[in-house]
Amino acid sequence: MIENNQLFILIGETGSGKTTQTAQFILDDQIFKNQGSLCRIVCSQPRRIS
Image (cartoon, rainbow, N blue to C red; front, side, top):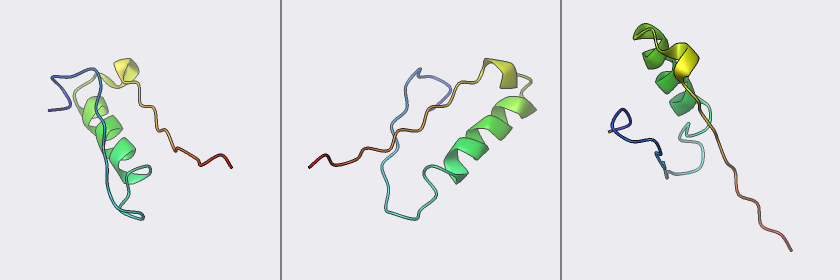
């Protein structure tokens, strides 16, 4: 699914590894496929403004 789309949105519970583990898995996969230099990963963490 990720390979066929330019944008991927992941939603999960707190502490599930969305920011730390998922980004590393995606990068490792791209490096394995010799496409690591083309890989761009952005992690957004929304904050509530009061």
